[in-house]
Image (tube, rainbow, N blue to C red):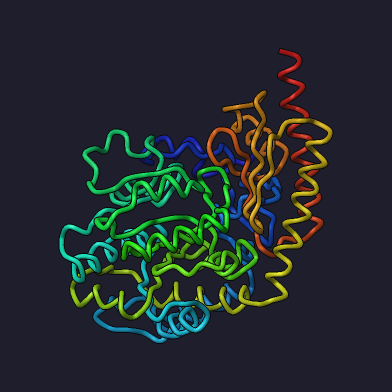
Length: 408
């Protein structure tokens, strides 16, 4: 085996241990395939956790990055720049929003959204209207504020005290929200599809009722579309399919196709509360990221591509159902475009990592959404032959896990 200057062991020597990455080190990608240090090939159903919307090394993104790299990289927000204005124009033309704030990640976009919601309520209703309602099993990022709004206690443990004025109710339970919301509520925050929470889509009637409750209590509705945005569900943004328009929307992940960028979108009247000096970011809206993101949107915002997402969704679901018919390992298969979750049945609760490891050993990269759900967020343009080949590897992995269990 070839000796490398760095390896997985190097991670343990020099990196903070908040991650536990796989032993293989990817070094090259193209389309929906990845190769590791030893030249082994993998089919990528993970997509960088819904980031690589156009796969690896898409020529249009490479060209956009190289072209901008030859012009200007960074200015800070003392100045504006052409790529950021062009990207903002495109987002406002294509969505409900009038104004955009750019940052570097989904967590930062959500941080900005939550700060804006409180600032807007303070400006218009006074300090008493500051409470935020979110949903159990939600995930909104890892800053102290966003992890507090997120509905998974395990991510807050050890970091208390967390910011006050935040409560959680069950997702898709409108009566629970009705009981919790009040005139002190400044915002309700929801994902159109809970990603980390297990790939759980919002019921359209629930989403519409959330909108109505927010209007009745003069609370802003924030949609976290960090994972669902930029074509992931088969629409440019998932709110379009739900038929519910938020007041604030956050987007990141696929927006940069692999280059770090995030954005918060809102209407003019709300945006006024983030006045000069009220919020900021050094790198947000940098020319490199914005040039790449514009190239991503130019490609993804295409009816044919978005229709292809829906068609590929069906292929994934059909193949997963075929696997389940033979092996009886899934309780439910849930999907919204190419955000797909296969929930393990009662015989395999808590053991998603076993299937993840077995798949990787066979050359397939998957994700989990908690201990019970296998998650897939592949490229939006993954070839059908790669879907079929990856599913064959997944079935082989499932068979091996089941055989080990039977033998034990």
